[in-house]
Length: 315
Length: 237
Image 1 (tube, rainbow over the protein chains, first blue to last red):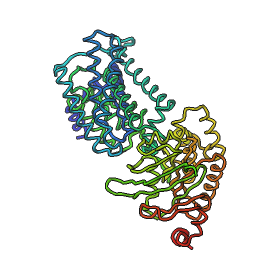
Image 2: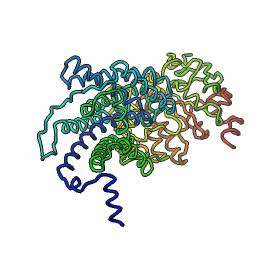
Image 3: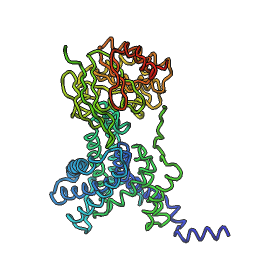
Image 4: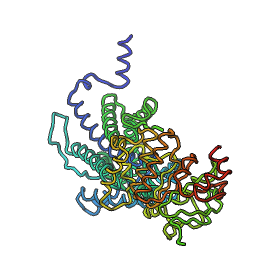
């Protein structure tokens, strides 16, 4: 009977022992998973930055990244700039848009009233996504990658491509730079002070509004970079970042919403899990559902995620 | 007679529709320690918050002759007003040292580092825990940190909101000794809100008693300490 059940499970999920014992296939999927994971991680980093400072998930983050990626398209494909330069320009431009959005739509609300702010960011998500659709249309386009094609290292079908190396390198560089910015600079200190105690931050003379605006700008730049990493693997269309946002949310939840290291590890784990499940369990229709399942399980089992802090505070 | 260092006239403050201060007047001379006494809800904390534009106000607040009313908190801090809020208001996620650095956030001079070291000498326990998260300090240690952080501004006016709250009597006493020493050494003008009236009147030069958002009594601290009404209401003998 046990054997029968096992055969049934294997049948339902279309698992073949050939596939499972194929080392090259495993390795190929691990590489792909890490590559995807790096892109989720960079968008998750942007989410974590805003969550740390404001205590809420900024749903408009994915939309600002979407706008950023379309700007990459405009600068590179339409204006003919080298892709890397186009990405830098788009990061600057999306930061400017994020600062404007923060100033006009976010700052009028008191920063410690989270619920209205969450609703506003949801509204911004819908508005920006639609605006992008109206301006650039809904047909799919392909976006070039910053990194050369080809693979320096190959084992049969398993290829460690330049793009995978580039994605991973970029996300680790971003984490390193963010760490230096937040721990070694005055604006970083202001940002962390605002995150830790809003009222005291005011009382020591920190201008809270501009500090949070700076956080929005930085998060938009990181989100745009993340989008520029992920979209070349897919196709550019106005709903693309919504899907990425869900995987990144899963990554951030898994890592602990207030941990930058957690966001990176969460991103890599989600990327790996997604590729392995899709390949070996043939779950491609349920790929998005696995992300939601990750969020659910984390919230049930360990709400602070793997690296999130439970706030230590003596009174 | 020259004008006082801090000169407050007709100060009103409200949270939404609820008027808390109904036009109070008080003044503190340079280098003095002033104490504000009063029952819960009298408007003591609101008075301090009003001075830092943390609540919407009407009236005049003059510091060394310059009008502070209408300015933003960040600009008032740049004029040298430091505020130790009730409940200490440290940054629990930041290290002790980072907490001190935030206190000097608006300073641009080169002596910030030296000041940090000086406060480690004054409060050795802060030096021992410089890399520890402020949230893990005990209540008394956090109060020292909050005061040291405020003094990192090198303030000309220090506002202290119930520094003794939640502290053991012995720690409170040594805290007030530290404050008088700092006042004597640096000439920092201080405005203290305090429940422990006996202790506060002991160190203060002038005192104000607030009742329901108005100044009910005022005068030199030693005269108020001898006043029968004050004794019955706040000193309990």
